[in-house]
Length: 204
Length: 249
Image (tube, rainbow over all chains, first blue to last red; front, side, top):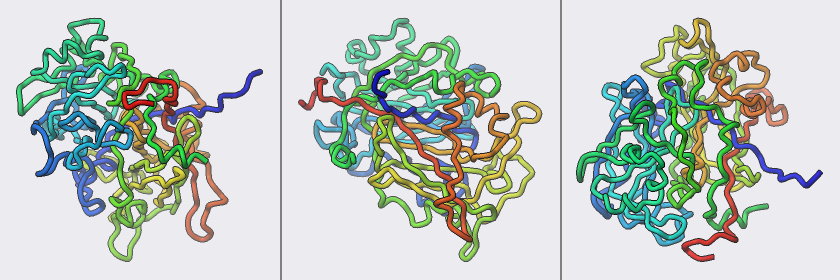
């Protein structure tokens, strides 16, 4: 016998189900009057620093159909490369930028849209700068545990070429699944759950 | 206990997730997962600052009735119909430390098993006084509490006769985006739990048992509401004492 580590097990994930909007975006679901506004709808305000951008896209299933009942959350650094989080010890992020957004995919077209700023670069663990990126988390009916991935920018090729995460992708043609299309200020990031163009998902 | 530790933000990466403990992505017994499950291996990444940081939410954003589903959608002087219950517990991490300031959001069907949602087609009636959503933020000890009615079970289109056991959905934020979790809480003594294809996506029976809240007789309020206790465990994180940190040790 040895001493026990005494760690607990993480609570098991379960699907967000078809009615995730009731809990996370009730105003979007038509349940008005409980909260003033749905959380995560406004990442920026008039005073937010940095380059304004729009990020939109779809979450596409293995039959090529966009999910119309998914929920997407994003998390990113501000324009100067600082996170609005207590664990950010390198400086103080722009107080007018939340860094976090939440958007359901549209019931008609399956499109999610975020109005945000282009994130600055943040360091990898060894100090190298990562290319500008936005962290994504996707939940929906049929997804048993939230899917994590990152979006990178098509106009940052030099930074992308040196990015520590992108360089770890063994099958090089799959790097493109993490790079948005379009150009400033509107970028499109389609997420493919399966198939030839399956997005690289992360175990973070 | 760990109040001192909690006051100083932690910057360690999270423990690797035990993927064998969670449901795999592809679970054909739950048919919708078939076309929505990634088929390629996940790319593993030890947490960078993009994963160990996360948004925080202040108690000031909460409304007075946010954690009272019996009243937060009800007309003045009225209340939701159903078995009155209190759901409470703690949010801990894998190290057993409380997670203060964790935003919990919950949603559920009404007492008859009907959701207030335009895609819902079950013939059970809506309760005009029940919306089905609530939220709260854990206190400095990781404790949370809310009041609701016990949700009913309901049938759903998967197999010809599949039913969901009574359950409450939970969304949880910890201190880092990589701790983000959505799960479901079940009720002690419900024989339908083990018949449910969504429950049965989880391979380890012990993991399911930890989703079942016991009746908490001690905290049951006489002549008012029974209590169920549901603790939630988020991923733990490493100490950074012996790791090179950009901000210095």
